[in-house]
Length: 311
Ligand code: NAP
Image 1: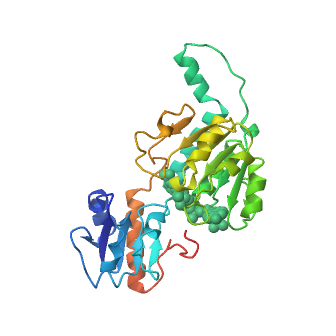
Image 2 (image 1 turned 180 degrees about the vertical axis):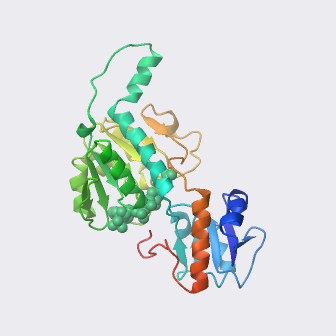
Image 3 (image 1 turned 120 degrees about the horizontal axis):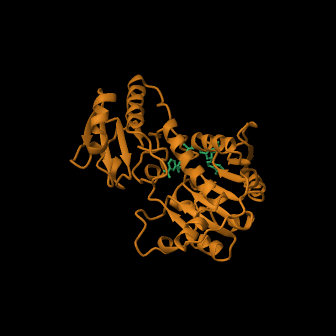
């Protein structure tokens, strides 16, 4: 099956071509940018597609993302309504994300920033250390990645709460909350807030002043969802008035983060360049191969999202 590569940001062939040849040998890659225009194309691999990208492929059946999120594909105006959108589900990525988040949760709990400052000033001073059990963590998103994060943080001794759209059965990885009332209840006990939501019309702007105001004073934000979840001015205001003591930001509304952006020099913001976790190249190839096989067999591809929910 032929697959068109569509991206205005990434050289998908250069990045994935060699692994696809090994793991998805029956998928022939063609380049959208080179002018591919074909009635036969039923499969696309896309990342930040140009607005008119899908107009050329009238028989498209599925578009694969190269990541867990599909928001940049869903936002493409030429995406046909009846096409499946497929995301990558990679347990290795969940593990990477979990260790990234544990790093920041423990950094907040054990005051790494204060030790760094003491070292800079050559100050030898022990600090009162808090136990994990005294630092409740609230996780927005209880999906594939959120569940792994919750389980690992619970294992480290943190009280963990998770929020989702639909109710979940109780688990050893902490308490579950859902819906707007559940969010308010979870936030009232939350010191560290982790955002692992997909970006949808319902979740855009969810990290705002009202949410920060419901958390424990001096709380901490770990933002690894999507940049558009965050109301940036509300974060700066919450840091200024001490409602939040710090934030770790991995994703931004504008990436790369512009050089003049206020976040770069903020003393209580830690920035990473959308590097919290990665899917493996093999997981993308496997997803593409499974999608091609499903299209060939007339089945719905595994890991196709529910387009009415947006994730
Ligand atoms: P997932 O398995 O689809 O899980 C999404 C979770 O969010 C589900 O628990 C879902 O609730 C919940 N949710 C969605 N809309 C909601 C709403 N309106 N209210 C409350 N909860 C809602 O996704 P995943 O694989 O865990 O990935 C989550 C997100 O992490 C991705 O979409 C992406 O934005 C982000 N991410 C970032 C990086 C990075 O490097 N920074 C890497 C990977 C992923 P239900 O369980 O009720 O459906």
